[in-house]
Image (cartoon, rainbow, N blue to C red; front, side):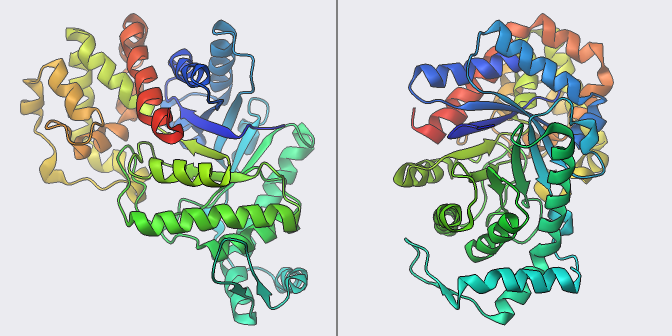
Length: 415
């Protein structure tokens, strides 16, 4: 199963915006860029919203049918492991094997010895075209990368083979994810991770490393853009080398779990993938849920009241809602408006505070991050929330489509 050169992970917490999301992809296609839509929803999100993977499949299939999409599309079992993958197997055809929790785990001596033996063919030095400094392969380096990543990649192999036993070889897309950790993987480490993946015979099509900088939920990149640029370019070159030397699939590409809205580095990624004529997979995570709240806020009085209620309840439950996302949010409590202040806002004021338009005088990234993790509040509202999504589907859908096309696809692919 082939993913396509460019692909976009489109999360949808409540499974109502599939058509709006696909309309943005179609708009890109009509403007000369083919992007594979990948509807993604993690086990954690299913548990919080009380949904099932079947719902994501139904949403994707329905959007494709109604809009007569004839190209490839996928449903991603996002951030799965052996404890929860069975929940997704019948409904997904893209599996993000999340092995970050296994990084640093001790491997048995036989696995380490085998890794050393399989690396012997590399010699003492590897020169990757385009990267000035060669990789000097020493015993200490091999011990270091094995100690960090071998157990994690071995676990990825177990998950992959478990899925293959049910779905068969070649019937799904495989991603290996190591991004939800504190310490980024260097391009040298990525080189050895890909060697380990090849040793496990995993036909990986996308690889999601942890990059330098903060990839917080719903807001822009925070970090050294020059350092990110250097790492990203070298990662692209490492992947190109690994494809030719390790026998990995020729469509292997980087996957950026953006947490949505990494607008500062989108042009960087666009320039590099164009320079080397490479593909990319970008996951936009919960940005669609935020557009739903924006759409409700501007749709009328009842929508605005629900939007305000979501914020007020999220603020009162901030610690609870933030806990699962503690590593990927940075909220300054002093910058969160009081419920009494929000209660006086117009729909336009609420939307402008939440909508990610950098430089807009109303935009508040702290407010945005809190709403981002507050979808549990909306889930608990049940029909009170989803009923309004149906009632104001045109307004909400317009916000979703505009966001994905104008703020994401246009920046990523220079449309």
